Amino acid sequence: MCFRYPDSEKYALDNVTFTVNEGELVLLCGRSGSGKTTLLRLLKRRLAPFGELSGSILIGGKKAEELTERTAVSEVGCVAQNVEAQLVAETVWRELAFGLESLGSSRSEIRRKTAEISLYYGIEDLYRRRISSLSGGEKQLVNLAAATVCEPSLLLLDEPTSQLDPIASKSLISQVMRLNRELGVTVVICEHRSDEIFPYVDRVLCLENGRLIADAPPKEAAGKSCFFIGAMPAAARVFHTLGGSGVCPITTAQCRSFLSDNYVFSNLPAATVNKNSPAKPAIKLDDVFFRYSKDSPDVLSGLSLSVYKGEVLSILGGNGAGKSTLLKVISGVYKPYSGKLLLSGKNATKRGDIRTALLPQSPRELFVTPTVRDDLIEAAKAAGAFPSGGDVTDEIEAVSKKLGIAHLLDRHPYDLSGGEQQKAAIAKLLLLKPDVMLLDEPTKGMDLEAKQTSAKLVNKLKTIGVTVVIVTHDAQTAALCSDRCALLFDGAIACTDTPGQFFSGLSYFTTPEAHIARGLIPGAVTTEAIAASCRKK
View (tube, rainbow, N blue to C red):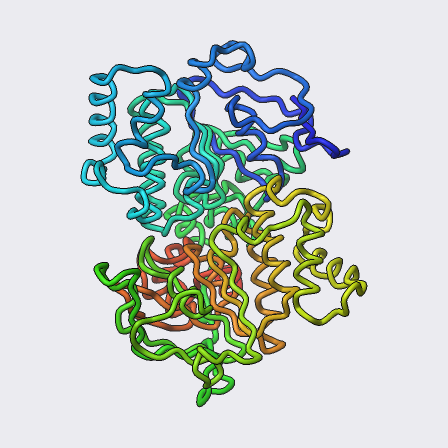
């Protein structure tokens, strides 16, 4: 199969051939922009992108284009990357009933199937709730239930955990594996956070620049030199980083045994907290309270927090904890009803020349023109650093090259993958030349290499005095680039510490590497930290 988008010389999928057997659980992986989302969308006829397709796609032994409309809708279920984009109804029960109603099911059948699917996923307490009142994890569970209520034989999942906290992510992956093992549903899942599922899939498919470079069982795939290391679980990444030989570990227990058998460990140097101007924080919140209406509960409840100039602070917490709300309070989108917010020591209502830039959770909100290039030009000129009509090409080319999106400048922003949209949105914010950058899930949908690139970029920003606050579910990103990490719980900051101490002190909101290193290498929470402390026996 080959596929090419309109006006593109390069194939998004180039001579891709594979078979997924009935009842298999298959992991699809690869770098951001490698063609994963395009491939999944082509397997779901109603979501297929417009472009030039050659070759054939067989679903259940029949050509996809020859399936009846009813079969195409009911036999292939899909959960998209964007949690919000797939929801169409106001309430949970209507969302669950929507697909069945579209198929002309009777009222009694709809009642029976929506009741059963609610019990299966344990969401009966949500049945009458409004979609808008649900947390991100609850919404994605409803998406999964709605995609499977019609009893599809094939389920496609595109980064289903990208907007979920670690606990909600594990719960969703467990439900997917139950569907496969208990009900025999064939599953093809695209997932960058692969630690929870990689060891348990039947096969791993890896795409690179639109080509299929690996199709093998997980142990064999993890041991291949051509395989994309960013798609491997932490255990395999540690093994390859150390240049290990023999059988590649793919679980935490296997990696701990590999390390204990082959290495001795040295202590990591103590990390220091960046406090350039402790007397004058760049951002200071003092006993802040915020709620969405007079009758609603507080989202932020007595929250106090200081962020220093040139510091990178990552805020973690569960879905619905108030992390995005906190960023919008700092940016001025929302105003607290009690407490103080100071920017560089001044009341936030008088922001003066302090420039803040907010990356929303949905980067599509930032795009207003038909091409990425035009959007970046708008941002560069809005920064006031260039004269009207002046040449902004060099600045745009430099930022695009740093983020690896130079080849996407003439594409429509909505045609990009989730990870590519994130990078294009960050490029737009960088061109605004902000003093404070507020990033809401900036690495959502990105592969590990793209996350590492983003982390390096964030670290460059702090060297020129930019203060960065990141809200993320991705512990790996936080560990890579943060000076400090904070946990938001019950409307307030529960704890703050350096990444090593923060993630070593947590058991669930932590990195896979922290699980591997626990009890062996205190404070090691990244692959690089583990490798730095290991010495061959």
